[in-house]
Length: 82
Image (cartoon, rainbow, N blue to C red; front, side):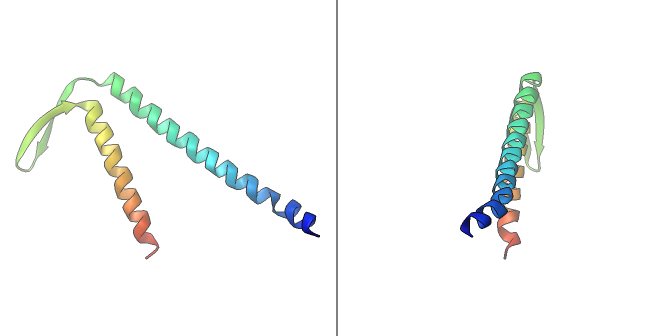
């Protein structure tokens, strides 16, 4: 009887592992894409703020925007359950 339950739920475990693998591969793909964009765009760009401006390499701007997006997504996900 216990064996039947294990066999019946075996697919769920595999689907969960597959979902983890897909998420990991997507994360690796995003990191690789950011690295490639960084290597291709090393020149400096002007960043305008309300009270001034600064210059930074394009890759710094792209990585900063990606990190800001991840922080916002994490905060939004944390508040979704409330």
